[in-house]
Length: 428
Image (cartoon, rainbow, N blue to C red):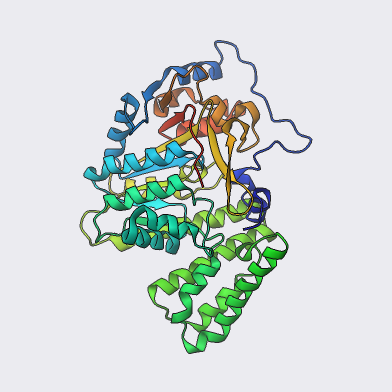
């Protein structure tokens, strides 16, 4: 892998979602407006600082904040963890929460990887536990920005908690870099009539990889036309289920990124959200007729897990869970997990590496002192904290969007926030 982080974000149309992690050239980040003690925003901030419960992590999560989160999640049909990626404590917290919820019916974990990659990671773990996942992550023809050691441990814990005859991992996202791996999974199954179009697909992927090794630039799935996969699908009208999933994943991944090149970042993000929503719908449909519907935990970036329109005004997969749960009288429980004071997190480095940076250097949506990690954090915190955001909703009234739209949206879109103090960066 030779793209740097900035190339990756812009090539994928992700800059709106993941940020460039630095202020724009020539534009200073906005600062929070001054407030009087009686102003609506001052009252909201005061309540925000008061309404906190302690959480410890240590050998496992504990404390009043943890107990409250577990109870609320047990009563929900879906529990969503919206994270800032690359934080070790978040992976540990997520694994512990899934284990704590198993007894109340949680049996599926949805993750921010493509369907086949999630499936094959689970198969690797079934064969050889954590080491199987680590070896899968290390394979030369498959890679993701989620390939971190703590994420591998999280996945191993989740898979171990589920019975061996159940498939626990659901992947909903597009594919980014593992085209050579997915194409190799198809090769032995391609029918004679699709051999010519398949050969063109394989050559396009192989040539893109070779060019990238010589001159850093966008990889295959960020640079090619989806027609190269569509031709294979046209020549292969009735593929087996797994081959169909691989072909649709490759085609849709190329289409999402093609929209980013030729359209707008919003349009690309909207298409990606629809792809993830369709994958959730397909998995839920498969579960019908198997008794009680499964309870599902989802762990994605926090822009995807919010209820309602997300931070770039898209109704993402997180919103769909509330709609599905409501059909049977249930609900979804949304948890925002962010690094707070003194934290560090892993970001993309050169090649397939990650580097540790201070979380305070990050500015997701270029909002300066008004960004969530600043406003939601408590500078005087002595440890990790949990915030019941629902109690703040009467104060997050109409009109405060002019002060800080992201905070208002968060309070109504998430039910709880976990703020780490001094969190560690995940490791390669």
